[in-house]
Length: 265
Image (cartoon, one colour):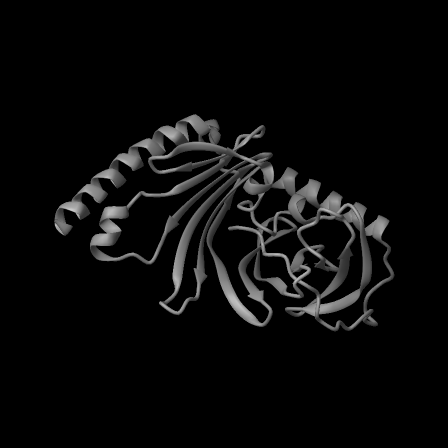
């Protein structure tokens, strides 16, 4: 899934609850990085199957994704869901593949081969909950607020190149609960994480993400399954192998287009 669009902060927040202990950014930053290192040690690889639903005037658009992560390598497979009958049969197996092989990031589309893209493009598909993607280098603790029943630190992000303006971190489990991004157009985009489930001792994964533009819900992502430490093979992160797979899908797509043209004629 792509990262949230930039937007402006317009919420009034309740600062510093009585139950929160005093904390400063240097000590909290160390705890967050230690937590992230611990996650990477406990979860050597992870496979996530999820479904994203985007409401529209013509009905919901459903996208199905399968994400594979092993250390600094990553693969995402995105297919169009919600198809039935002949459409489902014709387009079965058609998918876009994004691969970070640890050095470069590639996007493979059916029939178009592989294209190298900037690392920032690839990171959009990793998941906003992934710790190395959201922990800022510099932040200010603005207080606390309850999010989904969890007391959270409110962090105002000071990084110049940050994609987020504020993040909310569970004060007890150091879990990401909410993200907010801002833009010069005075728009606000928010990601709210919920339905947390433990995937390794002491480490949680949100199984639902709701994304809002202002007050409007624009996307809901639901994790269907998550498995860890299965020993993902090297060839999953081989862009050339994915391109060969994409070439076969391209042949199928070409036949579909030819069949449609024959019907039209």
